[in-house]
Length: 204
Image 1 (cartoon, rainbow, N blue to C red):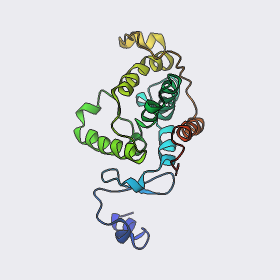
Image 2 (cartoon, one colour; image 1 turned 90 degrees about the horizontal axis):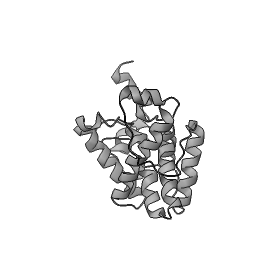
Image 3 (cartoon, rainbow, N blue to C red; image 1 turned 45 degrees about the vertical axis):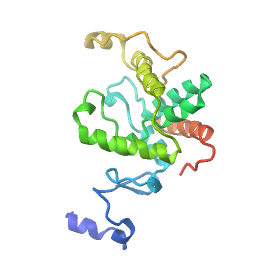
């Protein structure tokens, strides 16, 4: 189908409803149009974020079982909650929220994609703003790096780590167990933690 014919299939009044937006839009789980390069606060849906993150596998999918970004965020948030730091748990739950809209780029590649990093930064700030949060504290970034040790031990066989020469530092987050939840369960757990941490915010 040509681009012209595809355009004709859009709902009447599209231009009037969307105005001049940069880039193209994607459809979300809840039926919204979302412009990754020109996002607006009113377009952010935490239901979309929960669903999207639950279906994205970390480590580029090279794990021995499916392990979603949603589960990663839940573990990090719950760890802070168990430390009595719900203020930091709020950031932890949402710190990868942008990936629900633009996907997860593996760490070795991301520094080589400045335009992607810029778009990711804009989305990150917008999602945090939607939750009435500011910049992510350094403590959350540190924990986000430390949980990689927990994940590596659970998601890669020892001989695989040895073959790759990946020597893990002794800095795992104590008490965090990685499970490899199925997407539906990861989504529901993300939403349970979200409702606890943000009782005044609407999910959708």
